[in-house]
Amino acid sequence: MRKALIYLLIFASLCGISGYGIDYYVNNKINHQSPYYLSFASIGAISLESRLDCWAKINQKLSQDDLERKFREVLSQLGMAWADEKMIRTNKESGYRIDYTVESKQITYSFSAETDKGKNETYLLLTVSSPDQGEDLGRIEKRLRTGDLNWHYYYLYTGKLDHYVNQESRVELVNVILRNLGADSSELYEDQYMTSMTAYTPLFENSVTVQNKKYNLQVAAKSTPQQQEAVIYIGQPLIIGDY
Image (cartoon, rainbow, N blue to C red; front, side, top):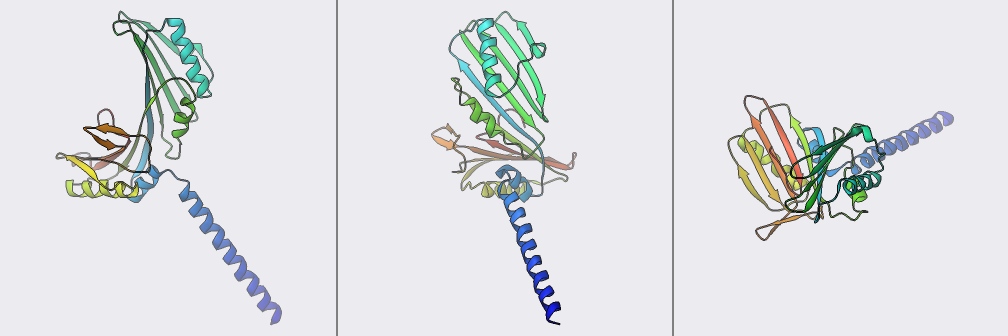
């Protein structure tokens, strides 16, 4: 009887330790998820894509050799090897352009650079996209900041709900995400099928100022009865392009 009691106590202790271990693992995993992924999860949305668009301007027209040299520097900052066969070179009337696309571990890097003879300027654009909601695109920004170019960074995270969402529900979905990301106040824009809000949150440092107001977060939800789905966008600091 005494031995059976000891075994029972040991078994209970192991169960307690195991339960603590599982709780710790789950909580630790949740705490290390991106705030965007957790925001999608809070409304039951499936994460589709994480994307970073960044660009820089050089106040002079670089020669073809200098432009390619600068591009090699950017690749080196990102820890990527040079592959000349992936380079697309184009001579245009307005200047010289290069394009370069490479995929690595489900991440697509699309780079373009172009000179403008008329304005005597050079523009560089890098787009990084991944279907993995756990991909930390912020590491790209950290690496680029080690160079001498003044890059501008815009993040876009896209998710989806597999059902139609009416106007009233779209507003609530957007508000839930804003609250999860610590945004208190917001400005609303909406039409029949789309709801968009811009706001500010102390969670992010990157921001823009529009008409003396500071913003660093935009959330939009778009849904039509014909498609029977809702697409959710989280932009930081704003959503750029069409959505």
